[in-house]
Length: 355
Image 1: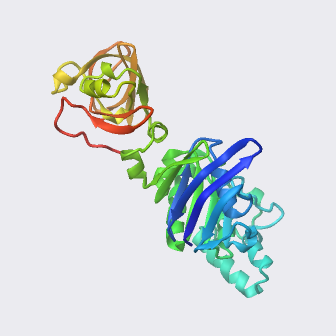
Image 2 (image 1 turned 90 degrees about the vertical axis):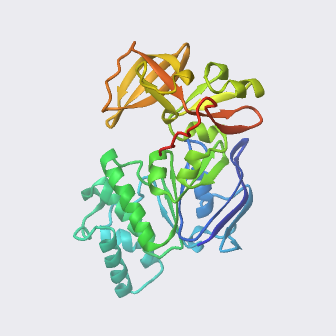
Image 3 (image 1 turned 180 degrees about the horizontal axis):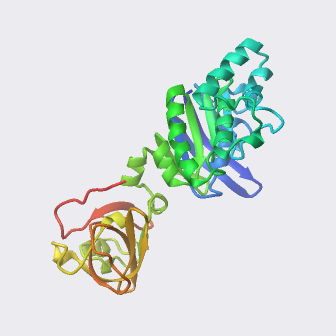
């Protein structure tokens, strides 16, 4: 299903939950609606589903305006955050529910449920009740039930929120593979950026009811279009006084009031003498060090300015109070009128960006 949203607004009294949002989604794409809690993601999802009515704006499926269509006529499957499974029904009957509502024959229902049980890895669980299933199994039942009537659009509201971390990671991969196999246009809401980056073909960043940016995870990470996106994606710190950063003095002089947002991977750290471009390095002290499993997260103080960066486990372990040199390779600069990514003017070789 091809989806187009034009100038969508949703107000609850004086509160504007969604503000002038417009976007298009191509058929078969898996889209992540990503943003902080209360930003408007679920309101957008519920308006697409027909569970909420827009205050203004248009929602079009395949070019047809559907604002006034009830949910059951929109061709949508919806997976709720809390699963919303029927506790008094077996797995088979939960999956079959939508097919029975459509009054399909018993044989059609049996064939479709059997197909979905195989697809979702639930074979052998058909006659169990909800309380006899794990959280991951319940989510698979909810997914299968939503797919049973063969919808053209699948909507998922924080589908992994109620599942523990290990199972959540497994289900991310499973969900992406299943949706690719089924080939259905899908939109899922999440506030977990790792989840969005791993699962989605494209991400829409939603903040304070507005669509801040839409693009592939790589595009958004590499070229954030607003300070909100730059600060929301990845870990970062904001430097208020740009003049303290070597190699960025000209930006500070040419654009008064400009601030720098610096991500950990933009920074190179080393013991004195380890960094080749000494003329561009800053003196810093290690404030704290945090073990992150695959690397160290190092908190630094450059004077009174705090920065954070990563350090390989293969290198010498740093400790609070250690003196180090720091090279800021690039920074995301922004002011009231503009935003852009700037390379350190004292170096000639661009630093690769990793995601």
